[in-house]
Amino acid sequence: MALVVPRTERLNRVVVVALVAAAVGLVVAQQAYRTAEILLSGLLLDVMSSDGVEVVAARQTVYFGLGSDTPLGLRMTPECTSAFLVVPLLAVGSVMIALRPRITRRVLVALAVAGGAVVVVNQVRVLTLVGLVRWLGVDTGYHWGHTLLGSMVSVVGGAAALVAFVWLATRR
Image 1 (cartoon, rainbow, N blue to C red):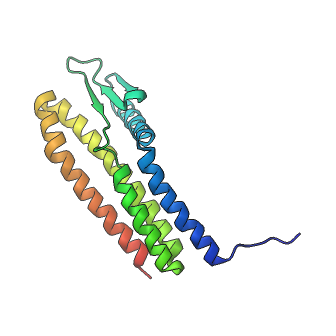
Image 2: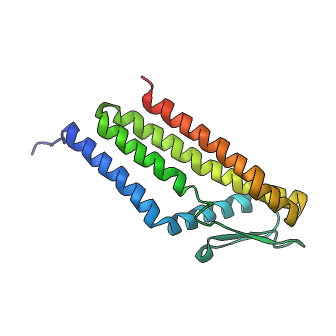
């Protein structure tokens, strides 16, 4: 029995369809994605903290500082997830592959790197917010962490991920 290798054109179409399906899937299943994201935050906080940490996955919420005077819960809302930063990368990647099939491998590597970077940046944003709450207190720390510094981390990190994506996908 001979091994049949799919033609490159067919394989590229499969990759494009898979990327579009992944983008649609992230939008449709964003609650499950947020649950996974907050579980990761809880794991990181648990490793980095001596305070009590608990994740309530059903609410996409991580509670920290449970052994202190100022416990707080952070909920991963649709506006706070990295899913909606990954979706455009998948969409652009699928268009790039559809238009220039010969760069499929580069685009997939770029998607892996940029997608991973966006997830890491969002975790850094959550950890920054937690650190500011612990340092400055709940009111001031949450205000500065959520409205200013957290947004700066997201914007700078998202921009760096986008630059990395474009550079990796288009370089020769």
